[in-house]
Image (cartoon, rainbow, N blue to C red; front, side):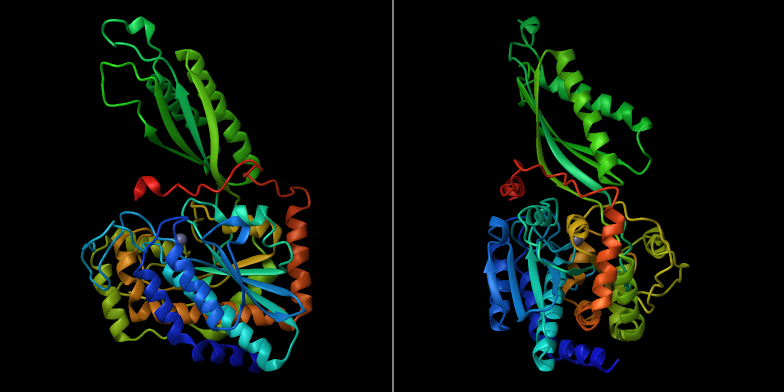
Length: 475
Ligand SMILES: [Zn+2]
């Protein structure tokens, strides 16, 4: 207990520079794989705090790792810093007000995510030094969580191969251990090639690639009735074959995002979508090529680590939000519908409480809310290292993910309090692992059990390269 309190004090002692780091990254929103400045800020902070720094982890220019300590188990704390397009917003203002510039914004709170993870790692480093104990702590600055699957590429490259425990978090409306449910997914580009011709004078000579994409979409849409109910398929046109209706479109390209409960279901679904693409090519006498752009695994839970993290949350209690924080959060709730707010409570399995703008509880571990139907590249880490994640309350209850409201709240005092709070939760969990070899062993046994009949087969095959240019079209 005393040691745990010591680790909290070590987090508290360094909150200011890390709040500033979060604010700086908020102010330089960069999209997936272009986070040069944000990554440089994190690398500079690692050096300043005395970590041994490795840049360009796994050959990714915007991935960085810092390590401290000697011997003992290796505890990794994972951070992110990528922003999103279309979510620029003035800080603290409860009405849509984009800032001048390219329109990017921290609409998922990754400015806080990275800074809190680095703060936690720093406190663990200071704790190891103060207590002269063996053990290593690492901070992994991971880019491109938003669709770039960077952690999957880092796993494939062996970046986590000697890591014993991985800890992370995500900004949220409530304080909780993250329920380990997320969907495995993959993005595949289907490029069709046909033959151009004059659409009126010689239509019989043309073979339309656009027709092929449309038929593929029709085929996939008919398949929806016959796929697992928690699978998801979305698509976007990357090339509709040109702007002239009187030219038979010789090329067309569609990006598919396919999600399923686990890797086995995902692989089956991918095979069916590929068949439909081939069928569309056959029908239209075009050719199709499929290229995997990215992919992530579903998350695996880890019961011993989840219990340890919950214990830290329960001892710590909710973040110290005050009346001013609640009043500011209420301004943002006023921009949301009752349904937005009610669904946030339900998602956590909690009864709806009106008039509560910021989290004032710790969600019990046993509570089962509506499962998350998104995906995260932390999934791949969780297949190779026992992994646990927190949800840290940093914004008004009901705030939708990827929204201007979320960007706007990223620098408020409540966001800072939330990030320091969750840094304590993560650092406390790391210290539990460093003090109790039995916990590390139990966490490893739990992972071995979960993967025994179902070993890790990543979605990313060896030839798939990180999509470094994925953000070009948004820029
Ligand atoms: Zn996110």
